Length: 255
Ligand code: ADP
Image (cartoon, rainbow, N blue to C red; front, side, top):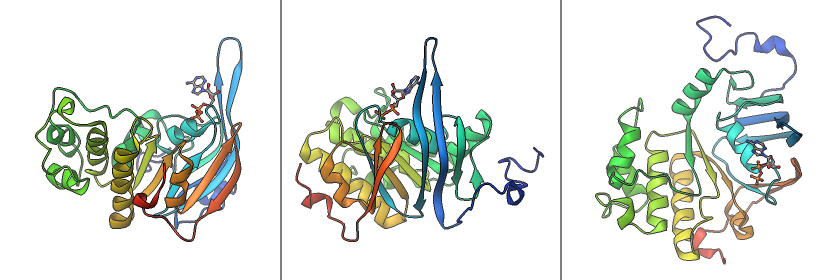
């Protein structure tokens, strides 16, 4: 790979193995992921292909162990593929080194996990500043917290915030660097319905306002009605993809 080709995309046109559509935020082709353990090989993803258009809000559903988190980790550059191809826009993530993936994550990706992972000894604002201090073009921490409805709570410590508020703080931290893609693994999994709806509203608002491509893993069947696209996983494969023409507002969702 040449030094002026940090993402290894040179020669892509010659590769001939993928039809790439630039309007897509991510494209995945024939993706497989195997975990090789001492006594067995776990086939977590077994030939997955799909596209996520720019600005889409995508829900990923399926039983536990069906490969959803594995997929999200690969989309987010947290893990390598075993076979197949993964794109973010015109970046081919497939064979990136760890260093290149770190750079991809830093420059493009926001993550929201089920357990908020806020630093307990820092206020909400300081937690967000951990990101804004190092990102190339961040929004002010206060603005990110205001976007998720936490403007009056930003100088509180995580222990002084409810679960929903902590999760909204984690979303503020994820969006403060203006990521192009937001990846959320069970963001409402630890929340009751009222606070869960507030978190969904925050995610939806960011998707509407900034056009941030958003991929949300969820077990909640109702959430699928607020997504543009719902991808169902079963045994490491996609079993079905649904597209929604009419989206429900988070407040219309019944838990
Ligand atoms: P889901 O998110 O749908 O619950 P996962 O992607 O977490 O599913 O897991 C898919 C399969 O891969 C499961 O059988 C799981 O046990 C296995 N798996 C996930 N991560 C690892 C890992 N780091 N090492 C070994 N096996 C793993």
